[in-house]
Amino acid sequence: MTLKKILVTGGAGYIGAHTVVELYASGYTPVIIDNFSKSDRTLLEGIEKITGKSLIFHEGDCADRKFLKEVFEKEGDLDGVMHFAAYKSVGESVEHPVMYYQNNLNSLLTLVEVMKEHKVNNLIFSSSCTVYGEPDSIPVDESAPFKKAESPYGATKQMCEQILEDAVRADKKLKVTSLRYFNPIGAHPSAMLGELPIDRPNNLVPYITQTAIGIRKKLVIFGGDYDTPDGTCIRDFIHIVDLAQAHVKAIDKLLGKNEDEHYQYFNLGTGQGVSVLQLVKEFIEVTGVKLNYEIGPRRAGDVVKTYANSAKVQTELGWSAQYAAKDALRDAWAWEKRLRGLTT
Ligand code: WQD
Image (tube, rainbow, N blue to C red; front, side):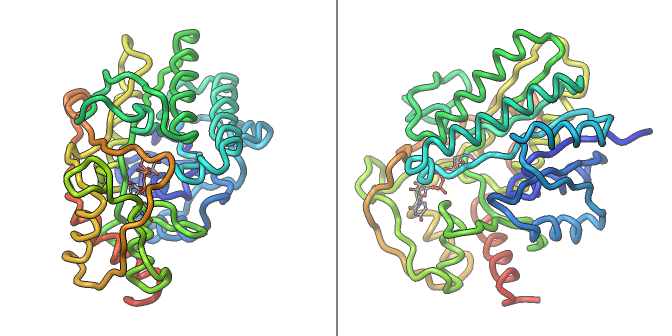
């Protein structure tokens, strides 16, 4: 039996790399592309250590049509694509909106065209809970409308989903599943793989671990005066391994017989709302390390509170999160320590 081959764009990034590990574990052959614009080779080495495989990898930009066509031609028999390659920072997108639209839209548009030319019809798309804007009620389920996005990043994900829905309507062969991530955190339990921002981190957990280890002086919690129980924002923090495993369930389903619904979308979250301050306190409790933090001003573009209703993905894909936030924090800390040479 030939193993199913899946192109993974952004496979050297945080979510992509963890998903590559889970794809191998489930008998798929991932083909990675990455341009290292927001990543480096460290995570590829981590994948190799965990899986013992030598990776199939092509370096290049997903929006580079010539490069992408060459990959499709060379690999020949791709069964599907997982599209992770995108910019993902809410705060950065407020400062550099055009760069976000340019990158996130062009890579998807180019990919969909090249897939069509090469008759590759199965796509898993990395979407985001930011498509809901500030939801009217929480937990938010998939029937919630796309309200105005709070950030250009969120707007790019709304636009990408619209593009895909239209593309699927026009092309009966194309099948797409969009996975709307809540807040992925943590690291592989082996500590061989984790989040590795190439510059100053924008996301909360790498900022926490880098502060705890002494790279950053202080964690600033963005806003302590929101209308929430402790005044800080509320998120649904999901362990990266849980999130990665959901992708395998999604591609299994997509490649199986599924004639009716060609555009599908699922929330990926735990269903638990946790405040930023709660998460910080939990980190201190779980790791026993000191953390220098203070409450500062709000960050532009932030949704105040959101967490998932994950009933749909549980029913239709048979997936639910297995890890708790404290597991993710413990694993993130083990990864940070290993990365900085504090453990062997
Ligand atoms: C979380 C909370 C910050 C840093 C993420 C992804 C995005 C998307 C949704 C998919 C916010 C606060 C942060 C810091 C802080 N989905 N914070 N101090 O913005 O919720 O978006 O999830 O992947 O791609 O990036 O995540 O980690 O930036 O922030 O107080 O130094 O932590 O204000 O309330 P966000 P985040």
